[in-house]
Length: 112
Image: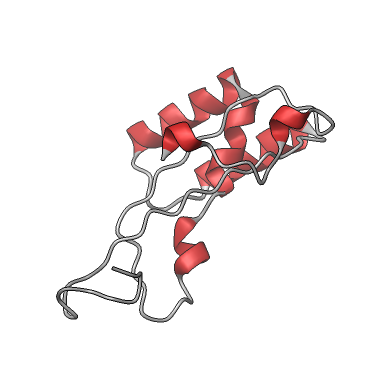
């Protein structure tokens, strides 16, 4: 069966999209301050979630980046698609762009 063939044309088809980004934090203080401001203004966080978010930012500012990831914005204007679920995280990583292990086009066969 090809991706255009279906057994039931009316059934929704779910697609898992994996995206891996490596971002270089060039000003940790600015990122942390912006994340704290983002959390303070987030109308969807209740007090407990807001407190946990602030604590996480204070403990590990690299987690600040997660507060700017918006999967709804990624798919919001795509016709015929509705976001069903999304999860993401940010964590420090070692990165050497000259190391062949970091070939961004390499397929991770173990994950498939």
